[in-house]
Length: 104
Image (cartoon, rainbow, N blue to C red; front, side, top):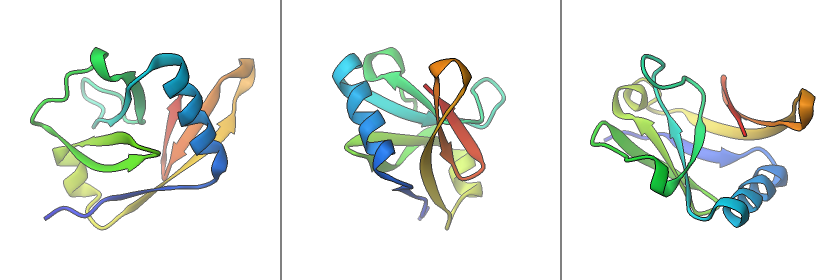
């Protein structure tokens, strides 16, 4: 059984996720392996991304499902992914997830 946990690095992550849910409705977070999907977590409207059998849910971020591609989850087995928010130039925000980042 795979064991990959997701945790918050601060309240700013919860605030960002709440704001995105208010603006876009149901959302999901996806982490792919980088071939045809990005290697950093991406946020999608739940209706805009079909989660296939090659993805597994490894946790929830303030109620939002966090999916990782199965092969990648096997590589991260036993890891804890900590999400943090960081402002970027141009008013964008980035959520870091261990060695990865999420641009929103």
